[in-house]
Amino acid sequence: MSVSPRANRAARPSFATAIVLWILAVATVIVVELQTSSFREATAGREAVTLLRARWAARAGVEATIARLGFATVNPDLTDAFAAEFEMEDVALGSLDGSSYIVRVSTEGDDMLGPADAHAKININAMSRESLMLLPFMTDDVADAILDWIDEDEDTRVFGAEFGSYASQRHPYEPRNGPMRSLLELEQVSNVLPDYVRGEDWNLNGVLDPNENDGDESWPPDNADGILDAGWSAFVTTRSVGGGLGESGEARMELPLVSASDVARLLNTDSDQSEAVVNLAILGSLTLGDFLRTDLNTLAQQNGMQASSGRPLRSLSNEQLAVLLGETTLGEQAGSPGKVNLNTISDDGLAYLAEIPISVRDTIIFDRKGRSQGYTSIVDLLDVAGLTRDRVADLYEVADVRSNVYVATCRGRDERSGVEVEMVVTLDRSTLPIIIREVRTR
Image (cartoon, rainbow, N blue to C red; front, side, top):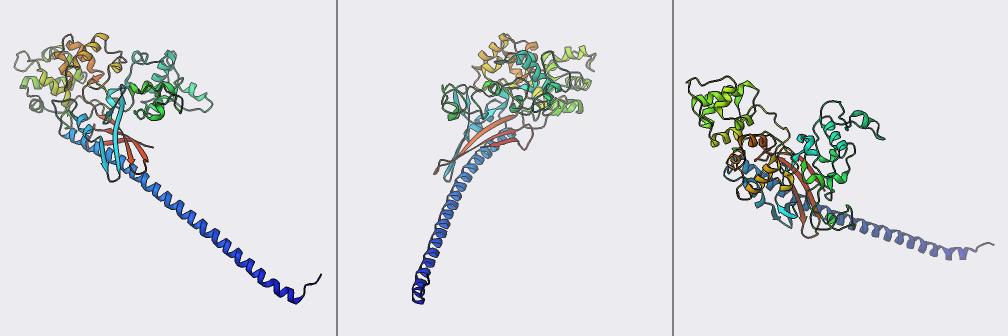
């Protein structure tokens, strides 16, 4: 059928109208999409700003903690073992423009302001088999496997695991044969379950989070009792560090490398005592604990020495011993696994140190309750009834009263949106300036 020219002309305006309407529809779609995209970008921008505000609030809390820890290290209060902790507690809560932060740790059923003391736990890299066996759920095969993982050789203990055990896994890997660097690494050891290590503290931040106190509503499973059951992580660590600065915040004096006059100025000793200390240090076979275990005159005689004056050596006073242990070194390796701090380790934590007899542990627990300012030197224990020089010297092998490393769990919050960012930062003051060893952000 043909179309007349008149009909064809009549159809043209309708076609043009359709084209215009189509263009308008497309333009509308484009405008709506642009508006939607702009809205999304604006929303994303606002979210980015709130996230950034929360992040910087958390960072501010970390920086405040670092500043106070540095101040307490350089300006120590040698009469109060908790002075550094109090300094950091003072800045554990803070607010900025539109945001806030809190530094806290869950311990013994309570939330405490300030960072966690890494030396309040036992460094697993220094634990004996006897101590390992005291941990909950520990078995012979796991204890031996942990020790095999840490030691440098490939000799497998009776129930342990070395290279061959890990090479035969579906996804093979190798044991470190060196100190563990984190508790997460502990989970790589043969037959170690994550539940053993973490308990309810699945993110290992040391804080009882809402999802760790809601029963089975969310992961991880917990008993919703308001108390953080942190598994082994409540009692062991890899973060504590030995050696480092002295109690005064100054570098320790290396006894084998100094003169008798240097020792005399530091310890306020006479010439005979100073010479004996230096000569004993040069032997290279003694530890600082030996000066604690045996009086100076006997120690010199045992090593074939006598005073140049021919008179018996005077014993070092407790004050002189405290300075000797707190400000000198016999060349101990810096960065070695740290000792536990007798002021901050929990009563339960002490129970996992096999090297401390039950009677000594109970004596310390009872005695320290009456010391509001704590032990300022391991030498203070010589004044505790029932603790002999031998027992205090044995204790000094695994314990001290100073902490080098703290772990700050700081949560920053944007007050308008409620968005939060958490930073878990490991701070090491064994040297100055303070070193940030690890940062985890979520």
